[in-house]
Image 1 (spheres, rainbow over the protein chains, first blue to last red):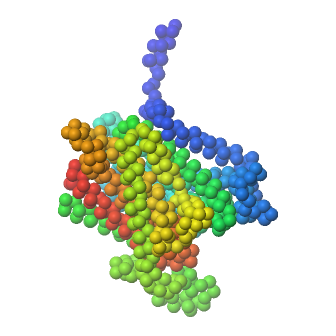
Image 2: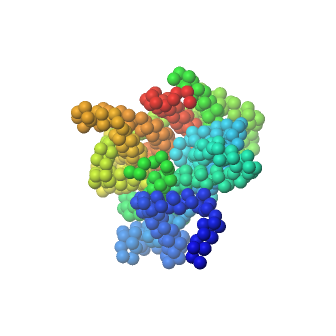
Image 3: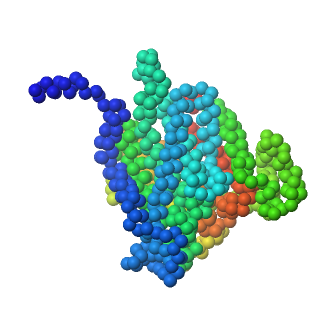
Length: 299
Length: 307
């Protein structure tokens, strides 16, 4: 009976989808990488705070309690209070979700567009490829937050526009990386074989190209989320992103800088939380790069 | 080599055209009529029409674009909508401040990053390596404007060592340079470490050691020279990032540079100044990348020049 079922299994069990198989491999090397594991736990922790925190600690954006303004951290107010007497700890808990969601949403949006452009460009090549890549070069000519800053200055400052602006600045780096990987894979023999067997482009792209370019996309994604969080909070700090009284972390820093002479704690904590978010994604990015990049040596 | 340089320079042309189109369109995709913005909310129709006429806003968009490019090539960016001064007169004094800030920060991050990276690589897995890499990771993850605020609080407000704001005197330079340079130092340290580790494991280093060359000389003369090649690329990319990053640093320390100018004029909707500043930064960034690319090929003889 047992031998029978065994042979059955070996006969009928389809080999796992290449994507699943590679995921398993990634998971193994991921687990071995300390920085990735620490980063993953930190992000899980942050997500728990985002999901539960605001429910336990509700805030009123218009709350003003001048009797308790600019208080230093204490038992009642762990991170102290700001110029309006609002509890900074509660605001930071809410702000964490806002800042992190801008970082993740903009990366997702820009990443998806970038991946589509990159695969299209790499797979089909030709004139469209040349034009698209020149456009990407142009976008890459604006260093750092400059492109997002220019776009926000045109569209106006709001959370939504901030997400769009950062997403646009994410597109070229994703497109370039994905195009390169697509180019490398599309001329491999097995892809030719697939084509000869009559597989449609769509099928080849989804079943073979996309899974094999997934690792650079994932690495770039986590690295870009870190950068996007810095851009989002930076632009909000400049008054070009999410505006106070929203507890976005950069906006809180911008609020606090006016009181830096008498109440330094207002600027201390939101900044620490931004750093924690960025640190977590950088750790994951480092770990994933080591785990997913076949060229990287395991040091 | 010359062939490579020529081709690389030719590749710049479409990029620069694209950059100019993008910067030019900033003003035109902005909601609102520029003439209205200049004249103010309640200006009479006559004034608005006059301004439209004077700026040639009624010309076809392509005519306006070519006029913009023709002038921009001669570094003429029109007049400010707010101060009525020629834009370049407003821009250049502030440009030098930002350039100074960026150059000092580059030197700072190179110095700190190289030393930290070399120590880390030479003593791989030691406590100093782990410590340096941890600090670098934090440096990389810190929002630079927050670091600036913290430095200001500790060293200017609490300790009174440095003036909290401004630019010019040596005391005023230190905090902004640390603020702007720390992220770069962290990146350079990580890059130097991994590049050094790559080089140190190579045969010719073992040969040098076997010959009896002193360890210090092996590291500095044999290994570092080759390990620096990838670092050059990073420094080039960093420099552009610094020009853009100075927007935040200048805002924190109230430095009258180009970064602060951009933000102030975005708030005041003074588009010619914003356009010119963004264009200048983008062009410098593209040129620095060109220089880096060429020097990379020059330094790394193994890279095939014609591929």
